[in-house]
View 1 (cartoon, helix red, strand yellow):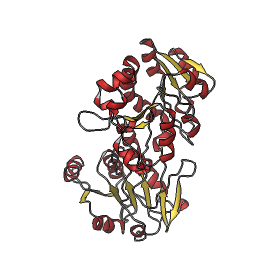
View 2 (spheres, rainbow, N blue to C red; view 1 turned 90 degrees about the vertical axis):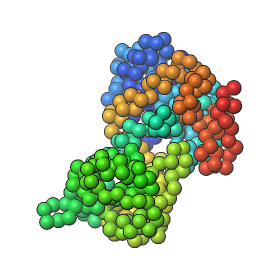
View 3 (cartoon, rainbow, N blue to C red; view 1 turned 180 degrees about the vertical axis):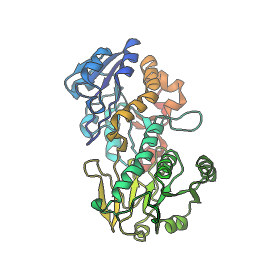
View 4 (cartoon, helix red, strand yellow; view 1 turned 120 degrees about the horizontal axis):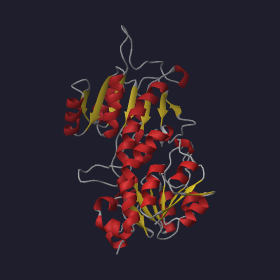
Length: 371
């Protein structure tokens, strides 16, 4: 198969779809790889590395899209990239379509086979491609939250760890999944007072055992969230409903009860965010203030630790890319139900119920599209 990797063009996105070792694996199986010049530079992978791995370097994204049968990316295709897609062409990347009607419509119009990293599943009910990015974002959330609490960023001037004679910061984490557990790990490590709120008793029990009682766990109700927000220094939004828009757990009125100079980090912003006041930001301008609360809502947090993130992502995407290249998309998706769960749009049709419901569009079974 002819596989193309364009350079990411979203602001401050430095990751790349394939690393040279993955390219070497794919070329060894007879695939032809096209890499846009400079695509891997932000992650420390250079054109010469790709040439040694057997790839062909092309000067523009348009040439990559024109040559390739399958496009491998990181972030959702931007409008000009959607316009370069064609019917039956595969695009395999993060899509996050539930909060983005315009992108959904553009991909439908393209006729392409759009497979989203974030909805591919496994036998344990997990999201294996999303998982490493969630781990990174969870760990980063405490790092960026600590910065947001500094006076220079509009924060209250609170050190997460505290000092002898000075209490540590209170970190409230909404969600006990992958993001939440990784955020808790780092917050505990710096000495913060950590509260995790979730509606799953099983998840709370798991984290209580994982961290040997070093955290406090709270069952999620609106009253519980409101109570703990009032004296929180840092709040991490770590909620995910696969493929769907994130529920708004914190209303504007609830935000008004928080301490001035507190900070929130909305890791769920890719799916719309779990704070009513969340608006997507960039690494270039990551924060803004609402009612004296610092908001950090960067939609591609792992993009700024590009080398680590790209390597971690390739570890989990390469088997699926190989299967798609070996079998073609129809056979691969029909054979593998978990990869088929990644199909969001195919042949102009929405084939993921959560996206259809989010945008009031007609849902079509993926099996009907693959006939």
